[in-house]
Length: 78
Figure 1: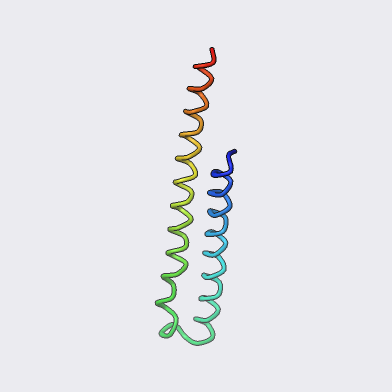
Figure 2: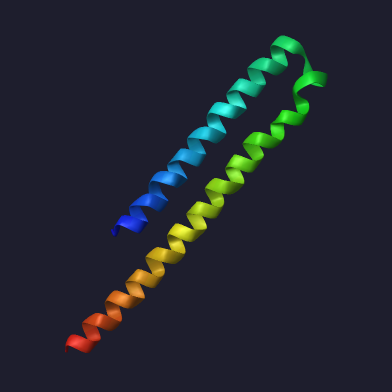
């Protein structure tokens, strides 16, 4: 795994953690202060989940391109 792939993996995990933390906090605030005050903040965990999915897509794409590159390099050595 290259350093770029490691960065994508760490950032993907970061965005999933942020999704969980923000969702839990917003649920707690909804129970404390009411739905009318906090419902719009549910967009934050949705956005962080979308960021995590985007990172996952980019990581998979990078892994695929690295595998193709490595395969081509192995064929050229033969």
